[in-house]
Length: 537
Image (cartoon, rainbow, N blue to C red; front, top):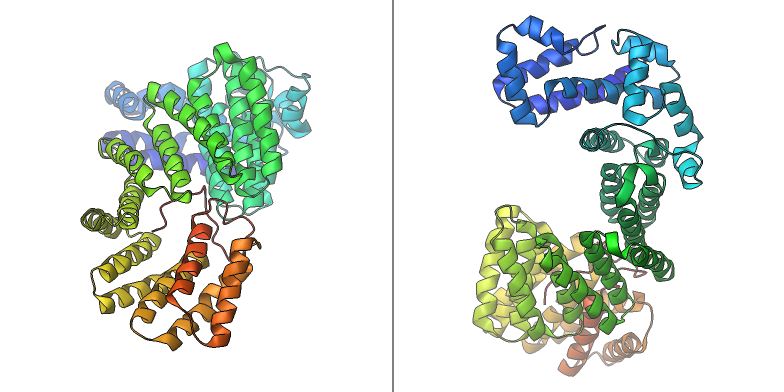
């Protein structure tokens, strides 16, 4: 048996083993039986009944209850998964594939593939290798599958998960090549798969994140017939998500192009639009407007997203829109306006049975930072305690250092200079180790202010020259950064930095730190996702 056959089978057998691992012992026994016999010639559900006897009916009922799929359908889909992989990734003829997978005759295999995909195995292979998405965009091919919608979604989900597992073991450009070959499975499931992959990859490599977002768009554009009434909404959403990938990479001009196209589509399908899609498109456009510093427009579209998501009772989108509005107000130094939105997010998250505890940590941290800015010491301490407890539970390294920074400033105001110095230096070293030089430099200036209060003037100059100045000099130059650089150079030359100089430098660094677009084009800045205010005071 060839390697490609083993590989195709192993992915499905791994899926079966995964299902067995989360099932009861009786269903797991049946799944292990399937893994052993699935590819024997002529194997069908009837064999289960013969081998398990009177127990078979109860097992099938338990199987359906636990896995949410009939045993017959599970067997058919598992065989079909492997069959389609072999059609795409091997040169075996359809007759050979039918024999390798245990179909009784080539015509039986042909009928199964035709029923599910509307084409014979040979035609299916030709369409994929010729570029299925391109054919469909040009209107040359129209899928004619008679597969029921629920079954199509289930198979699409299973195939998307298989592709995801395979992608996780590959390296670029092999991943891109693999997905291009599998654009046939341009189901809604594959679109969501590619969007998720684009977001995760974009955090490490923005350009590759854009490439995968483009694949997600191609997956939707190549499947107008298969997606039916959902095509228009998903097409707009794919464009908006591509626009967001470009936003985070700093390509704001092309991001605007993508959003203009998405909006034209939304206008054209106004009566049939998926309102959840509309809410997400507005949200992503709001992110773009924040990056462009068109803050009034950003607030308008974020409010529209929030209004729709509240009507739909979509908690995730409400949280996203509210937190982006918090980021906008944080950037504008309006801490008092952040608090109501943060309180709403806290209430939404704390009342969810499957609450996102990482997001909740961000809320507590933001609350502590905002109250600290507003000199609400007791409230800042309360939220700091909640954030620290959750941070330890989640073992979140970056948040731990950011909370050390908040606590260092808080105890400094309480008069404990020794503890404040220790906490701030721990935070600085931790943030430097994570590569976040902008935040670390802002902490450095807080240490310098504390040292100045203690009369340690040489230490002040050492900290500014070694940390704050290099970061300021790396920022794309503008008047405020230039002014702060000049102040620092004068302080170094005179071997004396006044408190006023320190606070001026801190203000400039704070504006850079809170700039939602600061990671675009800033050397040594961390690779971050969308702008977030959860990085301290």
